Length: 426
Ligand SMILES: CC(C)(COP(=O)(O)OP(=O)(O)OC[C@H]1O[C@@H](n2cnc3c(N)ncnc32)[C@H](O)[C@@H]1OP(=O)(O)O)[C@@H](O)C(=O)NCCC(=O)NCCS
Image (spheres, rainbow, N blue to C red):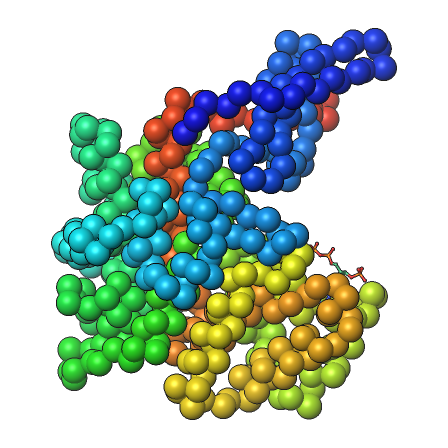
């Protein structure tokens, strides 16, 4: 990454007469940033709750412009990637900076396949959990457990260690996720299949049984691959910042990813598609929609339509466009028309035509469509965030890698202290 050079200067004037000159760093796209490190010398620091106006790092992986509805990975628009490339192409791009050619992709996939299996000891780890444990709790534990198996990370050449860590994580997360599901329903674990695609193998491990042959449906396989692709990375979101924050003190990378999974679990982050399905179930039938629309518009009612609107995208979420098309393909292929899907489709129609939603740019978001797809293909709601975690793993690893390739500073924010002043025991 090129070193940052200030292009402009900012001057901070305090009412006590102090004047502090600060550097302004230029981004390749988007906002510039004021460097505030110098403030400490003046016994000052900045206050930015939630770090919404603070750049945590310099990064060349992903760029988002929420006002324009733009998401770029290494410069490529997300819809171009999702419609023309597979998840493994995008994973390679995020990790290495360029799209792979045919041979590079083949070699990348072969390496991932060779790491699909997890140590057989993992079957015992799963047996320690209640069958009704939340799969995200099990995923936090299972990803941390990988750290115990791969502690040799520290002894290797950094370049090789980074590659191997990325490959192991990409390969083993689907296996662990499918094991979570199989364990929860008391069915035997299914070993990964090298001849299938990345998404196809995951579907196989989720839905095949040892009793009969399982054929991967290509429409579902493509939908799964797109869900992974559309969740692959999203700049410095809460879970990615959590991974960076933990990684900044230099622990085992698998433990860092576990921190990302924990952060993603929260309903304010990865849990939105689950919340969306719960809302659709609560609405129940199409005739009850007007009641819920009225509640969503009522200023005195805290109810909000789950799966609509986005904190960053104030224009159509570019991922939702792809997800919408994929969702309609899946529903057509499966010929499903449950009351829940009828409610979802009618809500979509209303949101795209009602002035309340149009004026506020409250479009259906990626979670709305991914929830419907996952529900239609038979994935239980409690597994939705796990699927998100699978897709996002590569974004976490790419950020972990980037952080490790730069001179590292431990993330150590400050606080505004509002407790007691010094006092003594009487
Ligand atoms: C995502 C979300 C938190 C973004 O919120 P935000 O950027 O802070 O937007 P605001 O709260 O400023 O809302 C702007 C306006 O739209 C309305 N609004 C926002 N989301 C709404 C929703 N889902 N349903 C109904 N009205 C909504 C607000 O009431 C507000 O109306 P007003 O201008 O008349 O006061 C919000 O849209 C939401 O809660 N969505 C549902 C949850 C969800 O799907 N989350 C997943 C996001 S990936």
